[in-house]
Image (cartoon, rainbow, N blue to C red; front, side, top):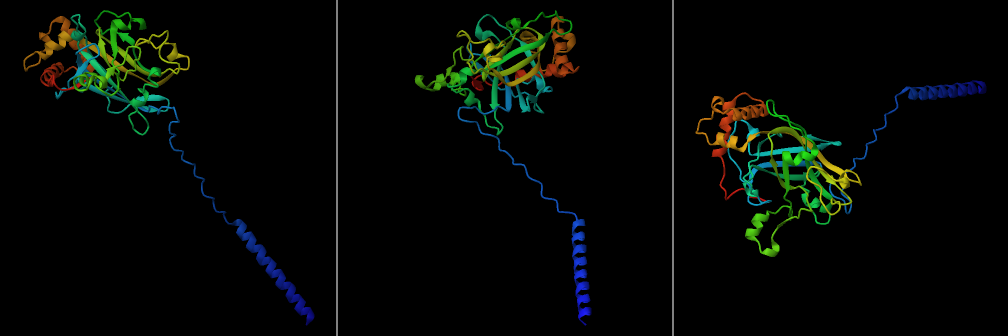
Length: 349
């Protein structure tokens, strides 16, 4: 009896051991649960440190065909004309967005600019047309940050430069011999920055006590948030817009760099580009030519009624617009003439 009991006990232990072994083997064959993916920490956009300026990630260039009341006294009057060709509108707005290390033109912005050669009778205010240029800078949150860069504590380190490249004549015109030092023969840019940066000096002079009036910054403090362009030669070119930071200051030997040629403090000596973009520009005709188109009756001037000089300019315009429909082009100039606003309105520097 004892022997049977011992045998039974041994068999029971053997059975339990086999069951445990089978159970362990079964568990080892089951797939192990995959641990949850480790989530990467989303780092918030760092805020500027004390003394740092917000990073510029969007830039808006706004152009407006204007006239002058004084050397820096631009007056822009809006025009409500409905046009066949939006590139002929007297106001153009181009938005550039930073993508990585490059700047891209935002969809919907005009891809080129069409201008008119300046006419001048000698005095500053007779020069026209003058293209007002407002430049607005924004950070990643969409906040306008011009005020930070125009602050008196730092504005001596920042300047927008504007310079042409790939300067060419239209087909049939005399070739243009261009080097960068000849930029003043091709175009002019006038810095019209003010203190405060966003106030109109002309309006302030009319409204504010003398001790509280906004003032234009001296020529030794060019920034380029406000200014105007004048074109002196019928031509086509790429126009570059570059906003620089010069930690050592923008002046060399107490003199500012011309609008088209940054000095060594910008190009070396720790200088840095904060924004850079280029736009194709087409200066298609003279002021006299566009005035003749505007002064026509309600019917646009056909090509066969234009004198040979103006016929060439008409072809330049059609090339820049990418069209052969001249009568629609000419009709737009009549619309522009009729759509001009009142001299008492508009915006002034």
